[in-house]
Image (cartoon, rainbow, N blue to C red):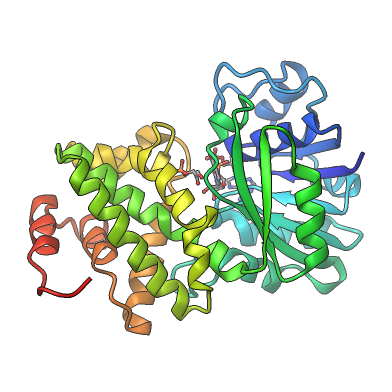
Length: 332
Ligand SMILES: NC(=O)C1=CN([C@@H]2O[C@H](COP(=O)(O)OP(=O)(O)OC[C@H]3O[C@@H](n4cnc5c(N)ncnc54)[C@H](O)[C@@H]3O)[C@@H](O)[C@H]2O)C=CC1
Ligand SMILES: O=C(CO)COP(=O)(O)O
């Protein structure tokens, strides 16, 4: 049995804490919302994020970060990309020992183009830092919390972090592969959300499966082009953190990114769609980052560019579909 702290009491942090508890580990969750913390402790549920699901009876949580950090030196960080730096700064104030941090978030920071592990490395003081990893792949929290078969990859430059994380999470319903391409695993998880938003839009517009398959295939080409430019191994995009996560996010009823895109396709504004979601839709912010990266590094990303125009410049959906279809003819 290992002690583990999970930071973030949203859907993904809760589902992963449940996997670790099922594996017999001693887990402490930390969240900033006292009501959710109380519910996890007393009802063993998280109705806002995982409605109708009863969690492991040993589930425990606290809103006291110092207490959560003194519980374990192995941290799972499960907060949206936007909150990563803030949580790291809080760790610097409250920690009293070195930590391994495995994050499970999917995004890239606009303007800096930083991956999440890079933000963590930048922010966490060396006195509190052992190393960093990422757990990613096709894994909706709603299914993991129901103990449905799921496969993911863990990546880190530190082999001990890869194997330790694999050992802690592996179970008969949660299979973990190690992967030594940290850059590729992080980029694949982040960029697939852009394509899922675009697929949601075409589905909302009433287009068919041909359009969906086209966006997924050409989307994977964009992801691979930008990813390799950033130093990823192109083969990673044919694995769980690449095409695996692309498939699930573009086709699952659980996907927040697909649902948000679908509402846009049906005519809602971005503000309306986001407020109806009430959960993080990482692809919106990542579209901004990837659009800027494509310009800066001169990478061709037509789907990302079209989506950027829709999200941030109020460009009409149908016009952008036509623009994509009528691009200069080319070779696959
Ligand atoms: N939900 C899912 O099925 C999966 C989500 N992910 C990724 O995990 C990350 C978290 O997503 P979810 O759990 O789905 O989000 P969520 O919207 O369900 O919950 C986010 C949680 O983070 C907390 N939070 C937000 N900002 C915070 C801050 N600054 N400090 C402390 N807590 C903060 C919120 O209070 C909430 O509890 C995202 O990057 C997402 O892409 C990855 C795989 C699966
Ligand atoms: O990354 C995910 C599944 O692997 C979750 O995707 P959504 O944020 O679109 O729900």
